[in-house]
Image 1 (cartoon, rainbow, N blue to C red):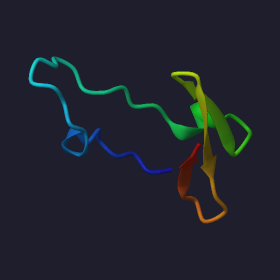
Image 2 (cartoon, rainbow, N blue to C red):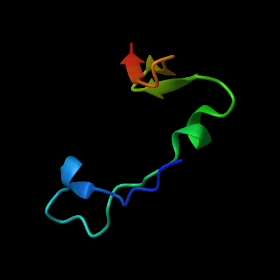
Image 3 (cartoon, one colour):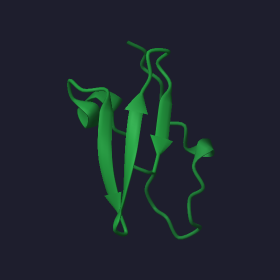
Length: 59
């Protein structure tokens, strides 16, 4: 397991933002499965971890 500091340069923070974005371990989202269903504005998206350890988000 790698421990990397939060790198906010990859996130566009609004000028009025006083805190960095939340950082969550992927396993805390996926649990024992390799995919997660996300609902946003009435649409559903699937976040999936591939066998090559890459993330794919599909609608």
